Amino acid sequence: MDQDAPAGKERRLTRIKLSDQVAEDIRRRIARDGLRPGDRLPHERALMEHYGCSKGTIREALKALEVEGLVRMLSGPNGGPEIQPASIDIVTQQLRQYLHFQRIDFAQVYELRQSLEVSLARNVIGKLTPEHFRRLEENIRICEAANAAQDRALVRRAETEFHDILCEASDNVILVFMCRFLNSMLRDLVSYRSESMREHEIFGEANIESHRQLLAAFRAEDGDAAARIMHDHMCCAESYMRRLDASFRSDLLSRF
Image 1 (cartoon, rainbow, N blue to C red):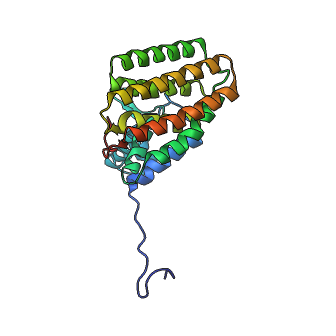
Image 2 (image 1 turned 90 degrees about the horizontal axis):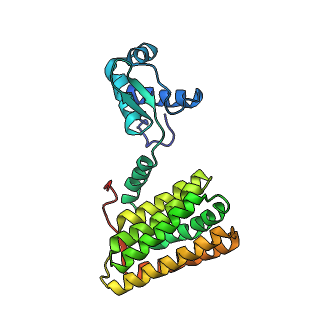
Image 3 (image 1 turned 30 degrees about the horizontal axis):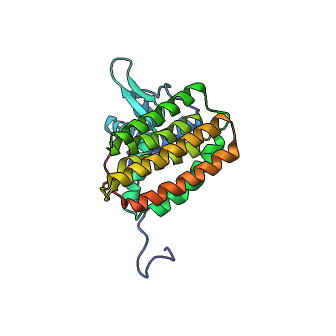
């Protein structure tokens, strides 16, 4: 008897579905065999024979892996399960589902951003290509035009896309994932209760100036300057968020 269970009761063992066991074994097989995107798994009949189970069980297991984004099912005579690259969008949505049931605020988000974005600014020094610089310059022009046109939604979206471009130049995949996740939350889930267009314009002007300064530091490959500017940029952004009475919407379960 389990000593942690109440007197007179035994712990009931959780029964794991056969399809879940098959899916887990396939995950281990992918890792063990070093399978890469584009590689194929055995077809249904071979999997049925290997695991000694029904077609329905195999299909349920493969469907679970497909929902996770680990495989995709190809149709036709030569179809079957194929390994596909992990999608950051799928993982991001799963994190949003988790956060839907938590209490989050901007102090928590910017506590992370102040650290992560500064690390990102240092990380991309010397890694930005001419194409990255072209796109960063174009992003600033988009922000300037949108701010002048008082297109609040476009300004806010473009501001985070500037940071997404920096992510593309980073070689730290964990840092990139965390920065892109926070950017997506700010881009997709923030509501502003303040309707003062002038306040939004000032916020946009401050972000544009920070982005110009960052671009200059990146061109000069000055890591200390880039880190300092990024830190001040994050502190400034958090301050404006509070002034504009920003909040996260409650629909984190939404995919759009």
